[in-house]
Image 1: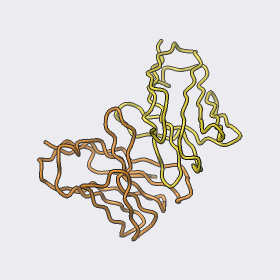
Image 2: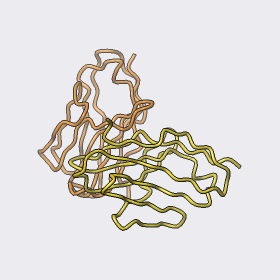
Image 3: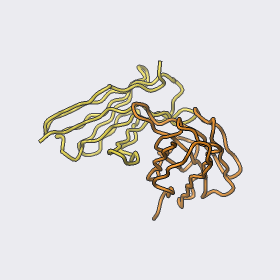
Image 4: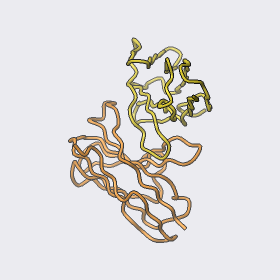
Length: 107
Length: 113
């Protein structure tokens, strides 16, 4: 089993849709959790850190369930500019990246 | 504010050649790391450093060397390039070893023929 697994995607959604990404991790000692977005042929950029109580940043909501070792990202009111690959990242002794889930928001 | 600077952006090597990928950060970050990204795979850790003079191996260290003589710089050396090292390489830094978010450089696209 991979350390960090994500929905395989791709997700193709219309503008304005709500989309949810799921991520599971295998290391129960993991301490920090993040969502990054990566545009084609560019470097990953931090979208948001994920806190135990859940957190929201505008249209983006992240949730963490330590008992189930599960992280989620919800995007509301999708914009064309949200089209990217979303990477789940987990930190234990080092940062471990999921393979990413590609999102295409269609006009 | 430059953040993490990587050079070069693109490089083509012949099998057996050596080269150094440069990485510098101006944020006084303790933690620096190198990743490679291949199609269909997540970013994989090559080497990392938790401070000047300290380096350690990641998941895929073979064929690569690193050094950390200063807090700012963390070069990655390919000793004898192989086609399997064709990849996109990212340098990233973090404030400390405690899981602060990573900040990435722009990446280096390396092709080995």
